[in-house]
Image 1 (cartoon, rainbow, N blue to C red):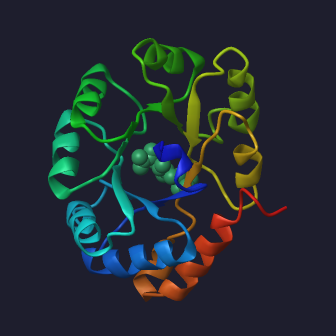
Image 2 (tube, rainbow, N blue to C red):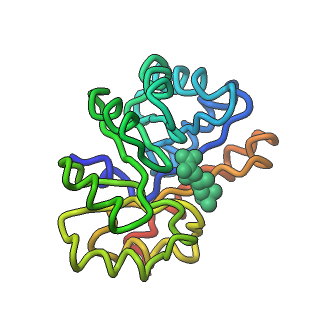
Length: 206
Ligand SMILES: O=C(O)C(=O)C[C@H](O)[C@H](O)COP(=O)(O)O
């Protein structure tokens, strides 16, 4: 099964304290969101991935903000089960393809999506989704590029997620709204679980 089909929403997490990684992953899984993207933006990221991979087997934990081949190496070393990038360079794509785990290279235009499709990539991150054209842009791409599917991320909220998820070329959406820094700092995992449970219903509930 494709990474895009495991859950309707992929929480994009910026983690400052690796000590919060396991309880936050458990809260997301309990809420119904098992796919978790830890961004490589903080020094705690690799340790967070390592801990979740070791202690929360129900989670599918991967790395986000993967920008370079070195980031790919670091993510795999930590045990990342998938890789997500905000954009795509030739050297990054080569490293992602060689990684042996699912990957979602970032694109924001028809030309970028076509360039990846030409190389056999059919699943991509659309970033920054709202700023790059949002639902209208993705809907327009589904005509000429019906065989390419996206995980839009960047500006997705509970209010607009359903519109994205209703598109034929969207498998899931990504977003940081499930794990706000203030809730992580406060250790409010019950609230995170509730946000996850609400998001897990987005594809089905009216
Ligand atoms: O870190 C990455 O790999 C990115 O490409 C950026 C993230 O996907 C967005 O920062 C999430 O967007 P928000 O949900 O609007 O906060």
